[in-house]
Image (cartoon, rainbow, N blue to C red; front, side):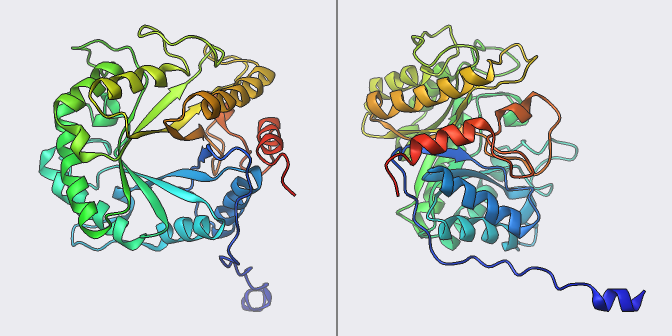
Length: 350
């Protein structure tokens, strides 16, 4: 047994490698990667290589606060270092989504998404440490995720004023150590839930309430999620419809509050091609709709900084309709939509 152990081959050495440059004729193209639970470095590197090879210029990645920060103040940077350093080496801009509360911040048995005002300072400390460590490598931080949904707010009441309190404390702490990084409010979930609903609040109403609570002073841009569901990308926006062009209605709220100078970051978008999900489309439609949406955004929505497709790849199958949002299989086999995006984004590139 000892002999077999001694004779085993040495593990492959994974290095960051020489700096790369993204060549893309569609610079708004981005993807939401799912590397927080990817444990093998070579898979992290390969994922980000494929993102660059597809022609995406940016990634959105989730960095769970609960994974890294202990109650003594120590932060385990090993995994975030892998993701950020490999992305930087591939020439990719990193938009970091921070969320999930460690158990020492939330009440016993509270869900990971729970954070009340007693923990806002602790979150701000982590966000500032993150921003300082990755100065020049992370371009923006999204403060939490979909706070207008009850589930994403730990089943607390989804009030915009509470969220703006978190945004205010995080903005102050981060800007003190890294003034150039962008703080993004949101990312708002598309929903039609009315005031008083136990499930959440309509994103248009929530954004208006964010501005009433002073959010304009504490964010450099707005992160939004805008899915097409069964509608084609050209379908007109309407307050009572969830479709891709809902982003235009969110923009109207920003303009109404005198915040037209700020950019919108679409940090989740796309269509799903599951054969049985009621909100899915056919695979060919998914490809056509995605390409058309990106072309429309690039040509008609100059206030959109990036449009990130949800999602690039997962470390293992989720075994639900969610697998049909991915562009690449867990085994790194590119799906037809990946190849179509690559052909469009690298057109004219040598």
